[in-house]
Picture 1 (spheres, rainbow, N blue to C red):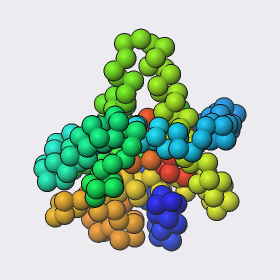
Picture 2 (cartoon, one colour):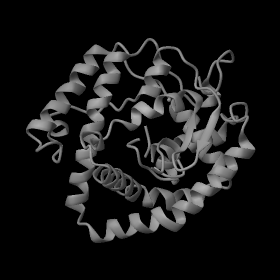
Picture 3 (cartoon, rainbow, N blue to C red):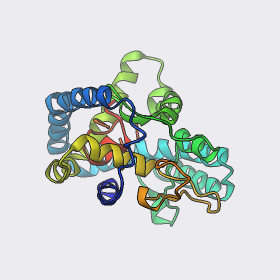
Picture 4 (cartoon, rainbow, N blue to C red):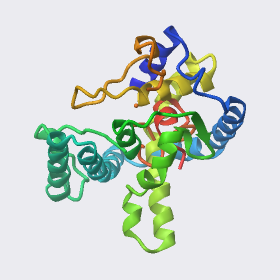
Length: 263
């Protein structure tokens, strides 16, 4: 929903991606491929998953993968020099891992330890690296030069890393992808209904969400392109692309499309 709203904000101002999408022709072809793949495979599987698996179990799966992401976020917060928030995030990860049965229960939120989601792409931004050109990857969806460089490490933030068996790794990644995609089924339907040009909408929402980093605050400041200083580029940021951050899986619909990959 946050991405949908940010996309609407972008549509009211100049296009964030106009100067940051030099590969638009290629990106649109990849975007179309991802959309067709999602429509034919991922969306039907995610729909069946959401209809068959009880909501409490899906919530526990969400919490489990989210807890693994919390650990990676804590590392990135320390890398960004945000030590106070990093300690709080570490406490959240520790509480959910120990008292929350390995992360199946979100005890941290109940005791006031809110989630601060960070990734290596945001860390690079905090270090001063610009977003770079917008890129759409097959299967993985929306990205940028900066986020693409961080992608291999961000993808490692998965419980699949704990398994040596290839089949087990694939099973974990598939579950992560399908579960993430199922969370964006409704958002995808909304996006289909409001976006005249879905590619442009997702691109601008992604670039706006990856936004601008405030050096004065402990947190990132997301700015719409119209509010950026004249001297700063429009993308000067999760969600998870034609597919699925956050975790490593997301959807081409709405947030997943703009913040996360298909696989």
